[in-house]
Image 1 (cartoon, rainbow, N blue to C red):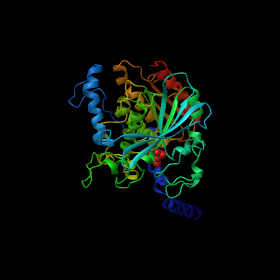
Image 2: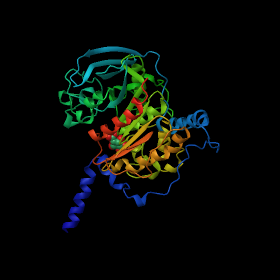
Image 3: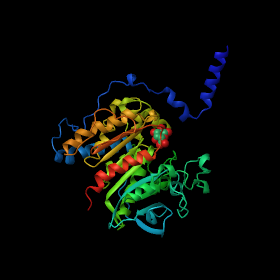
Image 4: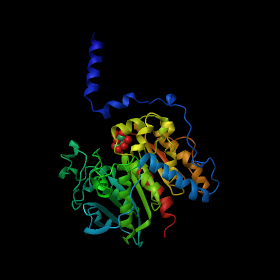
Length: 427
Ligand code: GTR
């Protein structure tokens, strides 16, 4: 009787929980239950021929894979806007130890869409510094307590803990996510740190693509094609516009910019690096499904579920693969392969099983044949390393102990990886 009552209570509790908290229980977390799958070969073209050299990869297979991701996963983004304009909002002595200058720049994309880029420059004797560029979830003010950071003007996800109500930042958001950003360490190691609030580019909700860059650049009055860009495509487009700015900022070496992102913004960093070859290095932190995790493993979050809960992240065509992921002409190892031979780092967390740590490792591993074809090393390990240990070749990987987050340990590995690849070949 008692057991029955508890069961009923559990059912009621499950029903009142939001879908996001409830759903994972129906998902597979058992390695032995991962279905058998065959990955598309990143080196075999659609016509069945195998590319045998770097030229074949560059001219045939790479464009083909990029096109497959555009058509079936992230959608097509427009070209850089002709109206792009940069406005210096503020420059001053930063409240960040070890940084020489804080610069805040408004990047105007269209008459009513602009991004506020926050830049901390390191103290350095070099003419131009390598940089980390990352999108943030809760506005530039959330990344550090520096009182001069300008508050975000755009949509952000409600978060009672951070004092965000009605999608607007309040004083409470200042520094609220500082633990995720090792800014002092980044500038101490000679890198500029650059960040933009992702809501400046496109609000993260299923709004029919009326606002943000979609509202500004999509043809009006036309039905959306099934390969139109979703929000990940939009955020990646925004990162490229930040790089457009950095290209003309003399204090930053735009040929040595690492793009980094966490979670949905890790998916975005991978897609940004795949489509824009100006990014010198790419870091995916706990990006999971639609990011570094192999879709065909269906471990943790699945393609069906991500399309159901976040229909605006991808293009319409991606939805068709939920019920049959094996029909996808790509898997996510090919997204990592698109970054080759540039360095790419994938990181997981032991408790972040929703993001499938093993599937994230395998994506990097299965991108290796492309790196090797291009004369770069891959990942110097066949199996995931012990927790917290970083393995680094031209591909890097670690699985941090703990939950879905970004920590100092993650940054320590990213900085070592960046030092190895971006500082070894200064301009
Ligand atoms: C989850 C989603 C993941 C991940 C995460 C995040 O709800 O299922 O794919 O992107 O959100 O971005 O925080």
